[in-house]
Length: 477
Image (tube, rainbow, N blue to C red; front, side):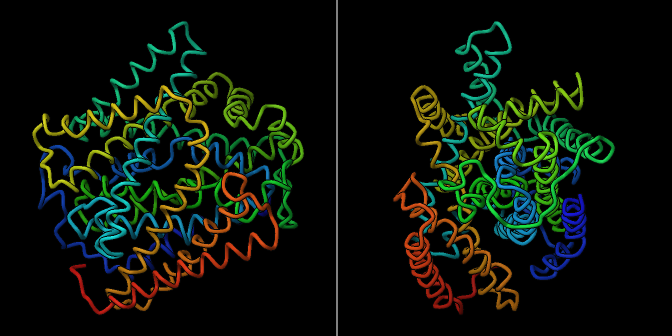
C-alpha cells in the first residue's frame, strides 16, 4: 500500500505546489476581464459559481475514462500508478490548465481556433476537420453504449433508449449551459467523487492488499502484443492526459467569473480525475487478489471493464454500489456525450463566426451534427472506435505543442514545462503507429521503436522550427 499512498499524497500535494507554479507561469490576474463578462450571451457565456464549474468540468472530462481506463491499465501492474501520477500532474493537469487559460485569454475560443492562432493556418484547417469528427464520434459511441446497457437492464427496447438519449443530447446541446448541464451535472459529479471516496475507505479498512511497485515489468496477460511503451500510455488517457479535455476546457472558460478560478476548475478537476483513476487501479488489483487475479478475470470476461466495475461496486458497497455502478457505466458516458456534441457545435459556430444566441441558429448547427452522429450510431464502427484512443492522445500532442508555442510567444522561461511533455507524447503516438496491429503492426521490436523515434524527431523538429521561427511575432496573449 506504500506505493499507492505515496502516489495519492503526491497528487494531492501537486495541486498546492505545481498548481501554484503554473499560476505564476501564466500570470493569473484576478482583476482581468473574462469572457463571461465581455461576451455574455445567456447561452454559452454565462457566469457560474466556482464549485459548480468544477463539478461540471470533472464530469465533462471524466465519463468512464478514469474508471475503465484505470482498470485496463491496472492489468499492466503497479507501474500504472506511476503513469497516473506523473502523467496526471506534469502532463494532464498542465495540459488542461494551460489550454483552458489560453482559451480564457482569447475570449473563450474553441481548441481549433487557439491551435491555429499559435501553430498556423495549416493546423487550424486540419483541426477544424478532425476535432469535430472526433466529438461526433464520442457522441455517437455514447449514444450506443448507454442504450445497450439500459436495454439489458430494463424491458424497454434498445431503439427506444437510443431515441431517448438522442433527444436528451439535442436538448442539452442547444439549451443554455445553466439550464440542464449546470443543474444536474454537479449532482452526478458529486456522486462520482462519492464513489471514489467510498472505495478509498474500503481499500483502507477492508481486507485488501494493494500490490507494491517493485519492478516496471509488463504483467498484462497479453504482454507480447500490448507492451507498456506505448500501449499503457494510450490505455490510461483520462486519468493521465487526454486531448478530449482540451475541447472541454473552453466550455468552462466561458463560464468563469475570475481568472483565479482556473486552478481549481481546470488543474483541480484533472488532479481529481487522476485520484479517481489511482483509486480504481488500486481497487482493481486489490479486489482480485493481485495483478494475476485481475488479468485472469479480464481475460475470462473479454477485457470488459464494465463487468469488473459492477462486481466491485456490488460486492464492496452493496445496494448503493449497484446504483453507483449504473451511474458509472450509464450516466457518466451520457454526460460526456452531450458535451461532446455541444463542443462540436461551438467549434463549428466559431469557425463560421455564427452567433449562437438565437436558438434557431443553434439548431442550424446542431441538427447536421446529430444527423451524422445518428448515422454512425447505426453502423458497425467497432474498428473505427479502436482508433479513437490513439486519436485522442494525438490531439493532446497538438495541444501540448500549441501550449509550447504560446509560452514561446510570451517569452516565458518555463517553456520546457510544455515542451518536454510534447516531445514525450509525440514519441508515444509515433511509436504506437509502428508497434500496434491497428497500424503497421511490427510489435515491440527494436525496429518499431527506432522508426517511432525517427518520426517523432521529424515531427518535433518541424514544429519547433515553426514555433521558434514565429516566436518573435507577439500575438495578443
